Amino acid sequence: MNKVETSFLHKNQFGDDFLWGVSTAAFQIEGAHDTDGKGPSIWDVFTSQKGKIKNGHHASTACDFYNSYQNDIDLIRELNIPNFRFSISWPRIMPTGVPPINQAGIAYYNKIIDALLLAGIEPWITLYHWDLPHDLELKGGWTNRESVNWFSAYVEVCVQNFGDRVKNWMVINEPSVFTGAGYFLGIHAPGKKGITNYLKAMHHVTMATAAGAKIIQNHIPDAHIGTTFSCTHIEPATQSAKDIEAAKRVDTLLNRTFIEPILGMGYPQADLPVLKKLNAYIIEDDLHNLSFDFDFIGLQCYTREVVKSSLLIPYIGAELISAEKRNVISTDMGWEVYPPALYNVLKKFNAYDGIKKIIITENGAAFPDTLKNGKVYDIKRTHYIQDHLEQILKAKKDGLQVDGYFVWTLTDNFEWAEGYNARFGLIHVDFDTQQRTIKHSGLWFKDFLS
Ligand code: NOJ
Image 1 (cartoon, helix red, strand yellow):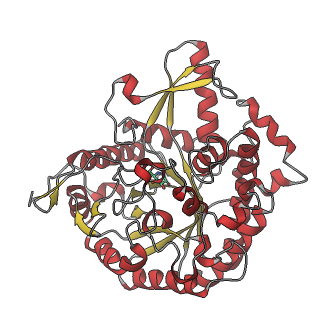
Image 2: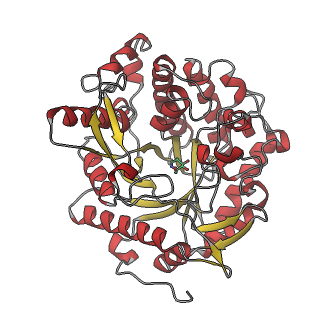
């Protein structure tokens, strides 16, 4: 495997301005869970509870990025990746979620930013990638309307300390996933369940998205401000009216609920009636305050879902038919490998008025990699990335807006409820030794970006 397998793709086909990057998140890589004054996050607490994470895995050390960041930044440079997306851990900056500020936390992120800039890599900050300070959860977390103010104060501290060097900001990562999994299903931190928790969290997170963006705008005049959404191409299982309607409800929930209020369209209550219950939490001019004119929207797309009508499932009346049941090729997450999903999602978001720029801020795949003779031949991941890049080219040829592509992710890391078994990295990590090995996919990406 000395020579990296070539494909017909060439970086130039995407244009000079196309942004290439790699994405990560603090809780999934940093470790150092209580180092230098960091407070516990909801994920520290959740992972310490029995039965929440596969194999009892936790992220106390994770990839030890907290200590080995320089080595990993050197690897990003070695892979020719010009943009690095990482998140700030709120409880590292404010251990209890509110002032006082932990200066060691500020110093840590200053070191990361400076090391990136020195290496010629552009920093892209996500302000919230799911690790809410635990003390705030004790006050209700995102279900408490105060969360908008807590978050605003935290954003203020971040932009004041890092805004002189960082221009690219993303406010919130995948709100539909962390509110759905964390506040409705209870399978992610903080493990809350039920429609009331979910709808409250949904509204407050959406308000926090706009509030955070306005703070960035006020402090950093030349900021490039975005926020990221998970999106999945949805198809009905059959052409029956029932399945088509069910697919529409799932599409509304997964793809529209969080972006439409931001675009000034309000919540899509007509297509998902349960969202009418949100009216109990919407007060005064909330709907007006929810909108913000983002410089870019980050889309994170991994797969498609096929949906059938099901009266047994409350609120949504729909069921997803798993990739396994459909007997299609899937990743270690059980997600179907279906590259046209990316094209379809781009088409869907291009249809909105008011989106200036779209960046694919995450795309990638988990496969069972094996390290053999110091090498990882992850050909499935290489093809996954190449096939998705083909879809981006197709979208560009068809005149759709798409301005960048960030791979999820740099190194294998802590994949939330899946623990360390789902490996998404361009770089393999031996979690016993913290040894890094660039996989075939990483070598291919490096060649492609050279
Ligand atoms: C979305 C999330 O932002 C990220 O944290 C996660 O690891 C990947 N998708 C893969 O599931």
